[in-house]
Image 1 (tube, rainbow, N blue to C red):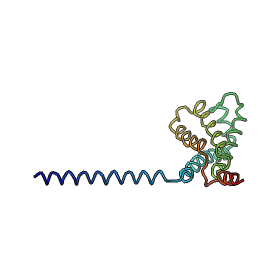
Image 2 (image 1 turned 90 degrees about the vertical axis):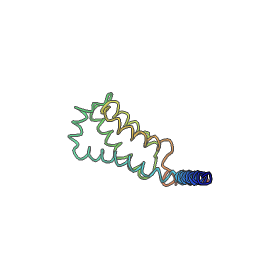
Image 3 (image 1 turned 45 degrees about the vertical axis):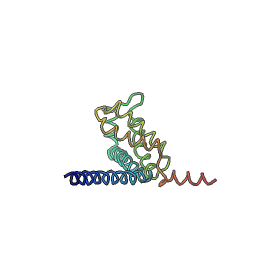
Image 4 (image 1 turned 30 degrees about the vertical axis):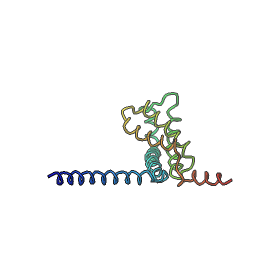
Length: 160
């Protein structure tokens, strides 16, 4: 009986060891994923959200101006100026993000725009805004990664 109990414990211990080893290997593999690969979907996801917003604004400019006058009411800015700024930011920064050009400044501008929208326009939309803010904070803090124009320029300047 002792031999059987001992071998059962040993087999169970071996299974647990194999499981832990497998988990450690998986974690090691995940930790080796290059940041550049992780940054790509962040850049494209944020770019898509703002690009869609910008093209929607352009599709019906009269309705956009009406929204900024009646609903959005961004403080300190006249509605027409706020609409132009919003559309310009929403159409230029996604291009920068997709290219990985001036990624940190673009992320900072979009983080500011997201904050203004959250605080003054749609405070109830915080679940969406916090997701955008999290992605933008990663891009602001870590940049676009090496698979970007920013990365290419950094490598070029580092050689000099």
